[in-house]
Length: 301
Image 1 (cartoon, rainbow, N blue to C red):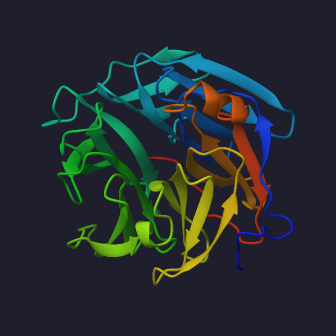
Image 2: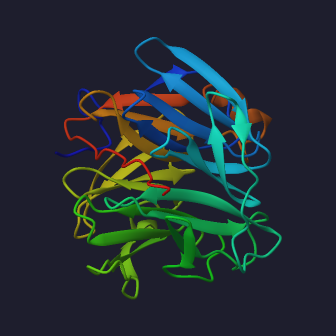
């Protein structure tokens, strides 16, 4: 599969849900419910989108919410500024958040993924986007521990290869994506440079990453007007353009995991930019010839 600036047939993104998110993030396909979950961090909201019917529901969160991920009991594990919390979308109820040990008061949780074994990897960041206080953690059956690089202002990801042997960490302001090996015992080796995205997109910042079934890494491009796809060796394979500047993250969904949903943001755009980008903050989608990887439901017990 290749992508390029001229847009191959079938890779043209179009808006599928008018949300106007201030900071749309955290898209994830819920295989069991056949729906997409995403968040608007700054509006403190969770959105559910059912593509087959077009139905949309919005849920209020008790604070800034970076991501939600389905659990094995039907609830959603959420990354809030206050810590990890469980949300029951059927009842609309929240459990009290559990703070992450060692996180500064000004930090919040920003992005996450689930490994093939059900382990959750997530990152924190300085909400003011200035201090190097962000770091990465992992959550497994109630236990949270540091896992990955630290001293990062804006963390994004992680993303994990389909076979669970490699993990990718994004340092957004550093315009770089790091990678590390995952041992058989779940240990993470020292992270090294995967790609310097400034070499390919000097005016953009890499946002949320995700891996497809071929092990390639897709990343949203903040101020980059699209999504980029990198081979496992770090080679840029191409990009899919969008009509909005701030592209945050993709999620593979649909019955065959080839429908790619893309979150975007209005944050940081002035009146002139918003007038030129009326679809900023909306949810987009396009069809990919390459499938994604199904998200494992998180085991809580």
